[in-house]
Image (cartoon, rainbow, N blue to C red):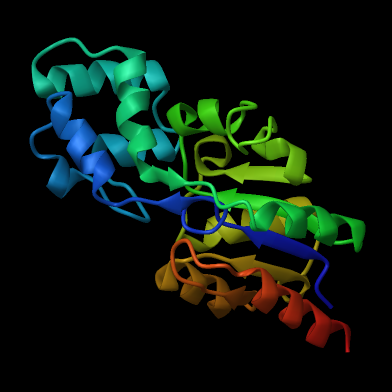
Length: 210
């Protein structure tokens, strides 16, 4: 029986743009951004930030060294927010409804403090709410010190939710992330980036309830 429903942020709650962040990082001087950025799991200094191995300030300093001139925190955030193509409104009523139905609703995201500064503000939802308004818990890679698709990311959530794998439904637009979660017994659903997943998720939960 499903008890907790976990949602990825980029691609599920927020439609992501995989080209704009490259353009923005190049704009601030990261000429090799095309080879450094990844839609799902970052590597190098970008991965260190999202893994929680370095702080935002350390990221700013290292990227400044990389480009050969001083970058501000605001410039770094501007570049990261290139991923935020849109925040579709169709998901929010469903998130609140799931909580009313008795499900634990949690975020499960590879992300960083630059992105979350915006996500945690009232500017995020378009109607004055931070992301925390819609979720019972926020599981974020840079705070957890774990990243998808590592199994430890998912076992961390299972441990903190105090549930078995079959009690968790995980929604993510990355087939690789869903494959690893499925491998350890978690039920998954993998819609495309920006797709309306609301009907399909409600159908899964209805079938689970019998």
